View 1 (cartoon, rainbow, N blue to C red):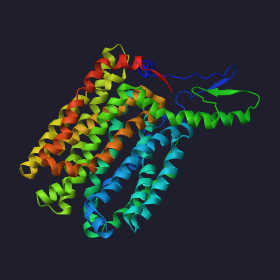
View 2 (view 1 turned 30 degrees about the vertical axis):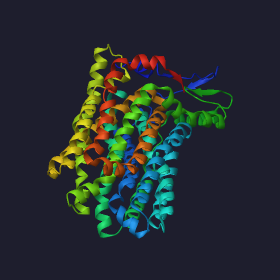
View 3 (view 1 turned 45 degrees about the vertical axis):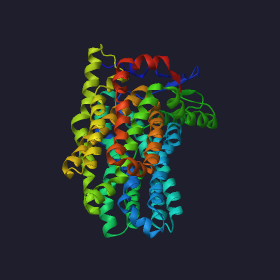
View 4 (view 1 turned 135 degrees about the horizontal axis):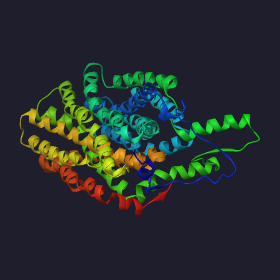
Length: 482
């Protein structure tokens, strides 16, 4: 049997409730309100809805990239200014979780999902109607902020419902959203832009996002245990006013104090935990690379290889198939390795047991990037060039899944804040770096220009191996109260 207490410490030191002489409210065995005791179908319906949210916002980030030139011509602006609309969206996709993740740990997951994704759906309308580039950039930036709710809280929601032994497999399918969204976006967008025009990209997004929001209103259930227990406590207190009740982990401080404390949590995690900081930087390098490649695919495949807009969209299936292959064959092994190492450690689990599989990604990512850079530079046939993006996709999913599961195992109750901490770097680099890539390519060519990303990923590649051996000591040394 896995020792969950050992897994949750010592990185997170739980704050104790100071209430005395009070009856403690807990979930009973097989309690229908306990998210971990929910039926398989109820859990999967929650996962499906948040996975759709997590795929739609990144989808919106890249869906209009095949129409960058068309938008620039229509709004009388430059291509770089249009790329700036993607920058605003992606940066806010990273800043949003800093607020939305701790808010979900104060008010619950469901309220945040419904409120934020409703606003995200509505904002697709003014985006479609944008009369100038300024409006497009501003509305897209706000859209990125509210659309980040599926990314910021998804990992926490899955942690609410699933035990560590089975979590990675489920999490792998959920995490396809943030990864597959930017890949499918240009594929779908290429067809829409070529046949209907760029504005219809956002009309279609408005329809799809609104449909998913309506599904969430009817089928999405609250999964955050403290909020469920607080609601139960309030119901019981009204029936038994003479008795004082409490629940484990209850925070009875004033709401403003709680909010102030919770808002600081993601940045405290990011800047006080060397492991989180390093792995967040690793994800940021990968994310920056991904968006840099995607925003230049049209030039690479269209200009260098002579493909049409629709054909370029189809080539995004290269990394997309890599994502699916990794989720199907590699990600389930994260749980397998985790459980096997736990068994050999006398049933005591450690977050570091998630990391061995990450070494697959650490090898594949730099190799695939060097491969892509130099096959483009020397105009090698399109198929070997495309094949490199498949292996990049496999490596990307492998790193993201192991790191996110590692965060969840370390921080459990505050998993959403830990994931939000990692999302900051990821989205900042993903949004800003692509602005400089055209200049890099112009100055150094595709070979050395794109190899910059390969060298960066190669430099940080040993981190999962180092943290596997030394992570426990680092967690003990830098333990914090949240």
